Length: 191
Image (cartoon, rainbow, N blue to C red; front, side):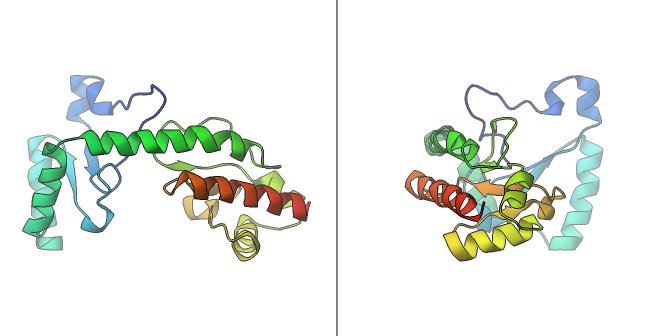
């Protein structure tokens, strides 16, 4: 989903590119929702050996009655059309990442060991911030952050990592800077 959204000189490498033997034993699942901003279209694709594709096709045909033709044409237009808008979107995400990463690192108790290399999320460990603020869980932290600072984050427990929160930078840089400032003020107020 995020193979086209890679930043700062990093390159996406699929397992299928590593060797012919790995390619034979790999099923690549991808979609158009993130790289082409087509979240509502719910369309994706699979790359695998022909025998596997036939079996997947048989199951999908019974499970979904296949995709609407308009969705298929939209996906085809996205992948075969001018990719300039996709690159512009990637560059915008990269700028947002590079601008807000240092701001996230300045928030007391937020720890990011590595700068994200792709997608449009950050996933800082906020265990110290939660503790500094006197909260028990990231869910409580996230609820109060939304209630008091009007900033929404997703508790990491939704992704199996309860000491983290997910921050999306899929909005304007201006709004992101305001959100980072509000989060910092929120933590400092509750310390």
